[in-house]
Image (cartoon, rainbow, N blue to C red):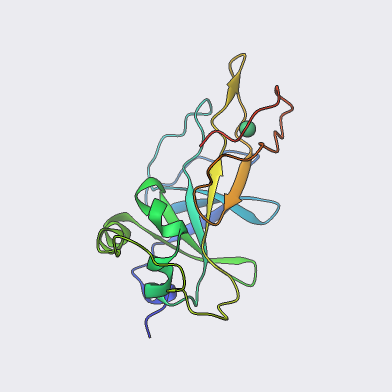
Amino acid sequence: MATLRDQRLSDFVVADASNLPVVPPDRWIVLVDDNRPVSAIAPATRLDPARPVPAIIVAPADLDVDAALASEAFAEAADVSAVVLVDGGTVVGVWGGPSLANAAAQRPARGAPGSVLPGTPTIPVIVRSCTFTDGGTICATASSFPGKPFPMPACPNARHLSAHDFHW
Ligand SMILES: [Zn+2]
């Protein structure tokens, strides 16, 4: 069976999210906060600190690719910069670009619940940064979700702005 690890992965480096790096021209940067991936920046991308960093999907590297594509998180695949593959808490791969876009386009229209194999220990999650702004300051608190929630939960609000629900 083909796993996520078997897809066309890209070169990447890991950097701390608190210290926005200069993005190299030839590889991705995976931003981590306390060792948790929070975003992935495509090669040669200009970062705007006033904007939220791109959303990602985080998934176990050994997850079956069909199970991944059928998961609720992959319903948002068109809205993320990349799928960040993890193995035991370590970032081991970045799946993005046309290869991911093609796979996501062939995703079944409805990912039926139960199409993910029972016993799969972990599922893909969407990691997004909150886009709420208050007095010109963006919240940018990263949260992870198994799928797009409705209604939105309260935001953890790491920068202590006025209380708000998570802004997708
Ligand atoms: Zn927020």
